[in-house]
Image (cartoon, rainbow, N blue to C red; front, side, top):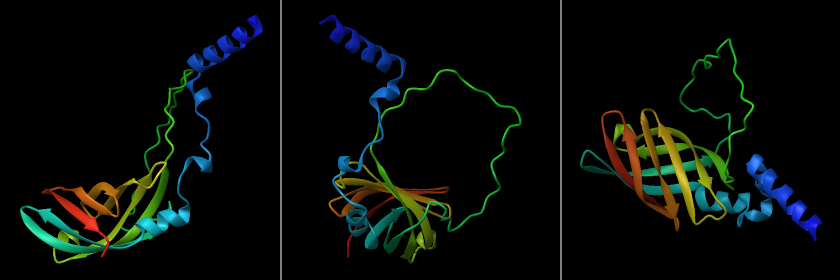
Length: 171
């Protein structure tokens, strides 16, 4: 009997000392969808309307799967690396989040020049495809929101001089 308590105490102590013990790599069985399901549900053609500065503009959006190396618009200098380093002997605690990220490339077409051109970004889906986060960037403009039931109703548009909202649905 005391052997069981000793084992439980050791596991509890291990969890307190290292929270990563409770978080292991999530397996494919944790997700309710496959890559093909995600592509079918999210890639392809979308229709939407955007409101910027009180003006409503219709637009169309075509999305394809990109790669993690895809950069449509910009080339930037490498990040500055400090010549001195630092280290810590304490691991930060981390929470386990099962998510799937799909990089995107596409084209946004509208009469408004601020919403016209190539886009890149990503989808983030969790254990189901019930609510998928969309993040897109278009030269100076960022669009983000959550797709639910093949539609996005309360998306946000952020750009330097103005902000707005948008909605999306399948044609």
